[in-house]
Length: 108
Image (cartoon, rainbow, N blue to C red; front, side):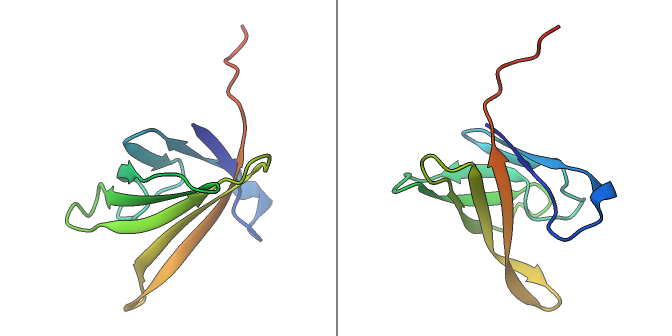
């Protein structure tokens, strides 16, 4: 699955980013080295459009991040929440919004 998003309230010149999600990997195109949002993922059971997951970031193999993907039926908006991300000596939840689209392939 490919999802498209932008950074809210950011410089429009920053451009767009994507989230590539498979059965066992989560890879946003905007992740920086040392970030917590790309790596091996284990998806749980989807209920009412909400899928829990655990993520083991590539740069922190001893850390497990819990989160959810919310994709309500007939909604174009997908919300990805990472819980307990270290920040400034504490932790925070990171919420990112994406638009889903169907990849119909590339015409040449």
